[in-house]
Length: 102
Image (cartoon, rainbow, N blue to C red; front, side, top):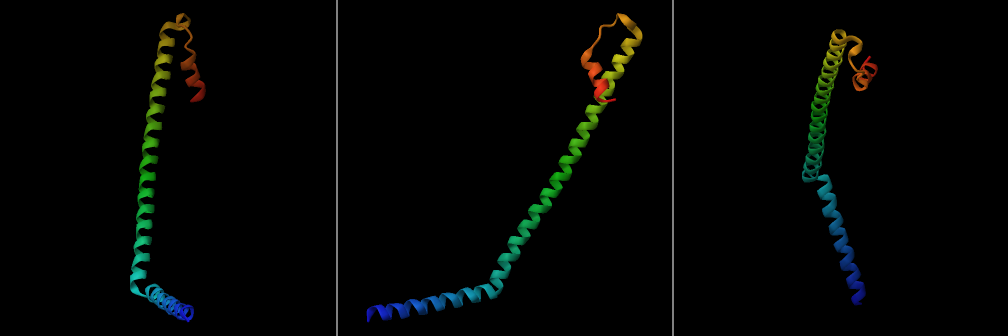
């Protein structure tokens, strides 16, 4: 008899819990929670996009700076070769820059 009463009590408890879950899922509190989660994800996506744009601009700036330094080094090498002619020793690293950067 105790087992039958316990089973009925558990069944009623499950029904009550199911009703509570249903009420929660169909109510405004659940909607607000989901909206809040989605909003945080959208904020994170927007921040990531902004960070990517910033970093890509920084990379482009550094690449341009490197290109300008290379152009200056190659130009200086050419100036010195023009002045010293064949007496200037070969500088393979600068010549490598000429080949790599056209």
